[in-house]
Length: 145
Image (cartoon, rainbow, N blue to C red):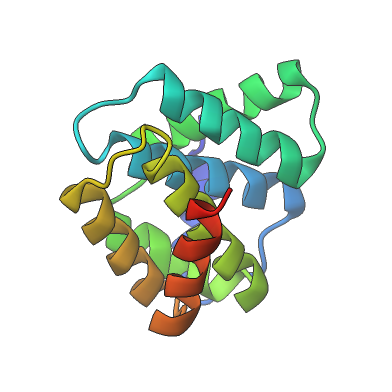
């Protein structure tokens, strides 16, 4: 389903993502962090929906469809390193910071910090070129909500 999207994303010199593809890529990263601890529960799905709905001003049906597309892309996407590095080249820095904050909000949706989720977010932050300071600020912002 996302073969051409992934091919263009993983090209040597990826172009900036069109808005619709950037939304799906964001959803896929959120799903990946939610699944990283071996559980993908309703709290995490609800938090993903909240992030997507607020960020993109979507109604509930469009939000559910976007999360579903993110779930599909997450399954088809290559390893996190290649996928995230490709996003770094295609997404502006401010949007990458927002991705990290959203990932923290999903990881903390069940009110538990999991070492696997923490490690994935730290790795993604680094791969996206988000500084440690900005990543910590994103985590603190997510915790305060």
